[in-house]
Image (cartoon, rainbow, N blue to C red; front, side, top):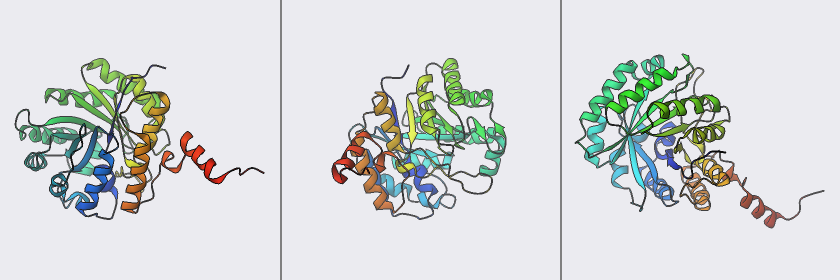
Length: 316
């Protein structure tokens, strides 16, 4: 099995997770969540987004959260922006890494942002112009990179066209999102391989949603195709997008399960799985949200053996 020796796990729960939860948490709880995650060995944590407060009220306190971050050696914090004003706020707050979010589906971006793909990209270009040269590192994310519930399959050419626009902006890392969570490993492998074939100099990652239960298979396929960054959310929380029939269970893959997968494959992540499982329990209690992680529920070799030692023989 051809796999990278090391991948980077990017934790998006504090942003993509919390923005999908109806409850609005105080900045102090968010800071405690981020601190617990950063202490596990994660090298990047997506802390917040600088969006219009009326659009994402759950993250209206972006400046306060950023000011309250506790720095951990080896951990970079990043934030998402969608336009020039968001970039101006992020730069003023001292953000060092920014995620730009483009959408490959014309219909979805029209519904979500009242513009088209070109308008979406123009807003991001204006945002990049607002950042002083060399002061910010950019990651170019592409939502609906494979499939859209309203349009169906998204052509690779359309996604590649957005990657090209990102490269013209100087972006050196892209994140391909399986936004609807119904994408499969063959198409994930094909897209990652195609992007790297055209742009071998890029760092390529995937943002994984799990509606069809294939997120871990998609992660494996992405790694086999050359992806070296995997994005996930603690406990599988969040990942809410607009889909037919209202909000459905299509959320992010759990970071605990993704790190566990890499551990079983012998792929280094730099993350301590025991520390991550402890952080998961702490954050689940902190937020009062039931998490959806197999690893956190004891479905690991160590977890099963610990249960056996505690409960003894349960056979008949």
